[in-house]
Image 1: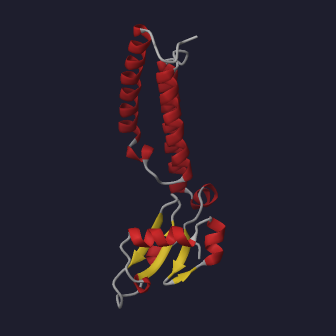
Image 2 (image 1 turned 30 degrees about the vertical axis):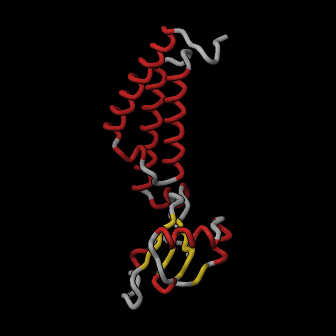
Image 3 (image 1 turned 90 degrees about the vertical axis):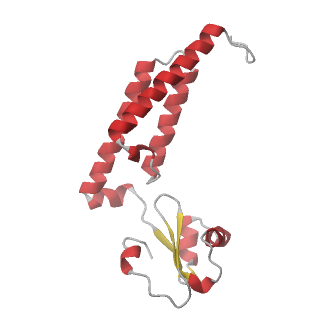
Length: 174
């Protein structure tokens, strides 16, 4: 059993080499598959990012996991992510089945309580996002949307501005 405060020099060197190798592999694979690999776009992308981190940690911290197996697992996750993204682009039905729809949380100055309950977003969460978006008067708010990524978007402008274009709320559950 390894002492939790000490490690042998060969083990430390193996860890350093593993980090260099697996990070190099990740950089190469991301260059091949594209930056979307780590984009915060959907729950599937989030799960992929977590899986990649888990594989990275497993390869670096465990001498029982081979570098080749780690690279193959990373490549497979990234390939599956690309296939999944392609299916979403090609078939709207697949996207509707595989992802949540963005949800309207505020319509103008009105908090949509039913949507807030469904999504688990509190009034204080929304107010914090309004402050973050530099809203200084509620009358500036045109809409607040919980996006498929879990981000909250605040659409606002100075009072008396124009109407919100319908395109910006396309696909948003009301």
